[in-house]
Image (cartoon, rainbow, N blue to C red; front, side, top):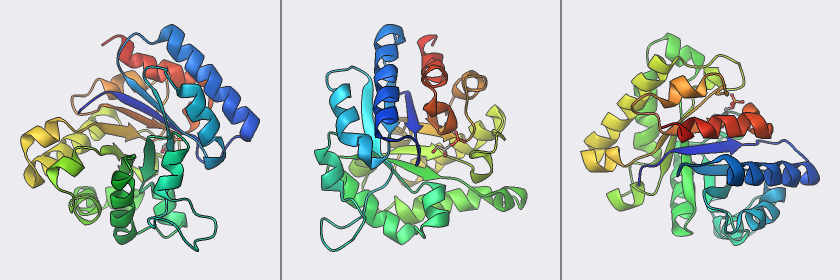
Amino acid sequence: MRRNIVAGNWKMNLDYEKGVSLFSEIVNMVKDEIVGDQQVVVCSPAIHLYSVAKLSTGVNNVAVGAQNIHQAESGAFTGELSATQVKSTGADYVILGHSERRAYFGETDASLVEKVDAALAHDLTPIFCIGETKEERESGKFFDVIESQLTNAVFHLNADQFSKLVLAYEPVWAIGTGLTASPEQAQEVHAFIRKTVATKYDQNVADNTSILYGGSCNPGNAKDLFSQTDIDGGLIGGASLKSRDFLDIVKVFNAK
Ligand code: 13P
């Protein structure tokens, strides 16, 4: 079901104590300040998952996610985590296809197909990331890139399975650079994504898909971005490491 979601991606930041303490602050602020039904998701490093999931138990609106899974069920894959293991911590979400994993860890559409399937098989909601590089934007090929990322990694799903995904448009050139896509640029791509989903499935599936924007989103630009018709929230990197900034982004939806 389409819903407003603000997800934090802590990436490889925060030791165990600092992560638990930031999460506690976030939970308390959500309890005090959130009046809407927006979903808050914190995607922490694996070391925090069990503890932060415990802290989120029974707290309306707050859920926890991982940043990656391995596609296999179990076995000799040193250093990896399976969907079952992540789910057993109490996490409900997993980021898949983040551009940093595609660029630095060789993640391909083919491995993402298997990861998406593994996540869904274990009741983890994938936050599936797509987005073009700077060169792809400048050459005008970005719609093709996005269409092929969807076609090759998630369009094997049937409509029921696809409805369980959250999509995140993260232009690579906007991640960690301070260069945010303008609300118009982001809306243009979000509308394209929704149209592509409608063509593959149907309008109802497309209208019920949550599509988040990610890339240098902060308390100063979130309102203009989230007020666009096809933007249902954000996937937040740097600003999710500061409880006040993160909550101010989440609170954009209080006013709606
Ligand atoms: P920044 O918000 O730091 O640009 O990171 C975005 C991101 O990659 C979230 O997944």
